[in-house]
Image 1: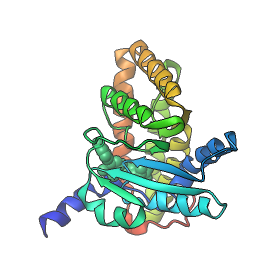
Image 2: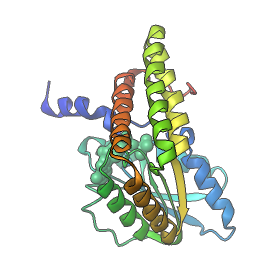
Image 3: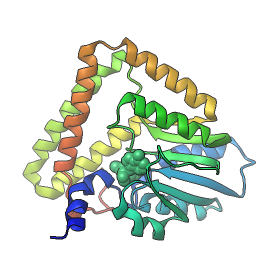
Length: 252
Ligand SMILES: C[S@@+](CC[C@H](N)C(=O)[O-])C[C@H]1O[C@@H](n2cnc3c(N)ncnc32)[C@H](O)[C@@H]1O
């Protein structure tokens, strides 16, 4: 097997996405709410997807909104070379590179960043959120999924993720399709719960302050719990996720 194909196989899970993704995980819902807030929206909204993977989720979202006369000009950034060909076809503009390294002069009305920040260290999450906040237009909207690290939710989060893992294991008796359906159900439940949107950079900065405060108040045990829970969940998610079985019509 060629080196390129091997690296693609080894990395497929980290770029996992599918056409209906932004409907399943609540991005489209947050975008609609944002559009409803302001009747004087621009004719064409500039959208940036940070960690867009193949761009297929944003393409489907753009097509959906265009049916209602809402035009989106979509730009995606992704660091992985193997998504380049698809992303270039699916998006108006695709930038191959590391978001942390890229200098952008353009400002965006909407920035989407989903499932890129979850497995990063806190300092990196903060750095990414700050950079995104500064790329927003004055009343621009950031839609993203991150933890808030509240003490009361930490144990519940851990137990929920453990429960998800057991349910995923149980679904094995229904074969790959069962595992896939359970995975999609969990994605929906878990990610929608963590999806947030902020209007204007100040809201993002307030959220960062709250997140840091919450994290500092966590006990070492809670911090370890969170990191472990996240890895366990992601590991089981990867194992129980067979790309061949991606059937967009299966709803969680
Ligand atoms: C799990 S995928 C999520 C794709 C899509 N946003 C979704 O939710 O379906 C995460 C993507 O983020 C990309 N990524 C991770 N770190 C990045 C970085 N520093 N700069 C740009 N892209 C990055 C990965 O290559 C991957 O394609």
